[in-house]
Image (cartoon, rainbow, N blue to C red; front, side):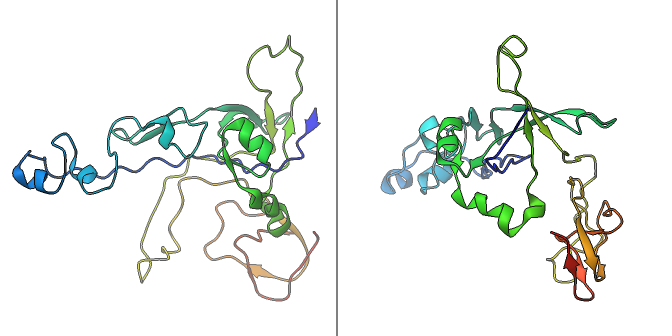
Amino acid sequence: MQMLRRRWWLAIAAAAAASAAVLAAVVPSAANAATGARADQGPGESTGLGQLSGLLPASHLTEESAIQVNLSNETVRLPLYPGIAYKGTPHQEKIWYILLDASDVGAAHDLGVNYAPKLANIAISDPAAVQTVTLENPTPQQNPFGPATIDFAGAPDFSPTRIAIPGPDGFPLAASARPSSRSPSRGSPVLSGDVTYSPDPLEPPADGEVLVCCAQPGTVIVLDM
């Protein structure tokens, strides 16, 4: 197996194209002609918002690898890549992931994704957010078609039910709010100090570890990085 040295930010979820709701039908009239609007244009198109329905032309896509953007259905089709999470454990599972950005210009060009060089800084500024993965290296006979499988240390859990309760001022949300997905807790070893959590994490860290993403230090914290 070969360890991946490029740190690609693997998004688990793709952003859907937004489409405004059409509340009124357009009737061809002299008013339309006066404003320069064509009779076959929708209300949004006649005011400069662009295409609001149908398939978005490939020339308008910001993600070159996107297969299809359907504005009428508000859906996006993207290439899926195979992966395995928790390999070699009782929790091993087949997963599929998408690629949206790459910090390497050559990889971004080859994969048809956005070039985002600052992604390479994540491992420096927030090492807990970076997951080291393993790229399998099968023979052509073992894998004659498609990309090689990537082994992930963990995978998001999409089973929770989303709970969105406004806070006293609307935002931020109330402490009882919960997202519809969660990632495996990746704690950092703590040498000394105490922390608290508000709200409590959905999955508590292991003994002797803290979740630096959401911990609130009560004293001076010393981490074993």
